[in-house]
Length: 203
Image (cartoon, rainbow, N blue to C red; front, side, top):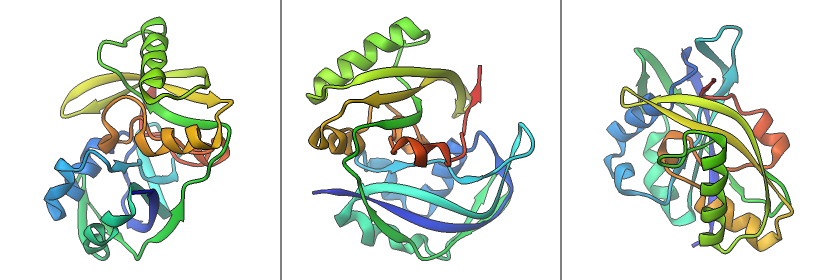
């Protein structure tokens, strides 16, 4: 089943910059089945920040990546009252976007168990790409730290270049590493990824 992106307009906030776990918790209150859906990814909210702590949404968006058959499951989120760090958010009707088979992809944060430094991270990326049957040139970016369920999780930004159309779609649909529900391991075309607000602090 092909994957697509659902983009929900979102109003309210502001929310903490490091809000990925809080956002997924709020979504799961309305759709408990999200916990069991390993084929869904939740990007961090898009907005603007003039501090190191808060994200101001304005005309913000929330991006969910899911199989097309799961769209009906997610539609109850429209107009559902979400509370993130004590702030009320509301979602509008989403637009659907097909994934683009582009030669370069970028992720704000990718995490692997026990990959705490760049050398171990590169090894983990190579193994993950091999497991997917994907050939690409990897470029590691900044080290980042996010807080998930009260624990600090270390990861890195990652770019992939030289992807075939088939491999590009495979990476976008499958992701790399863990914690896709918390915005990790999710890839976009580089220009689009740059416009998505980071949800982790550089370390």
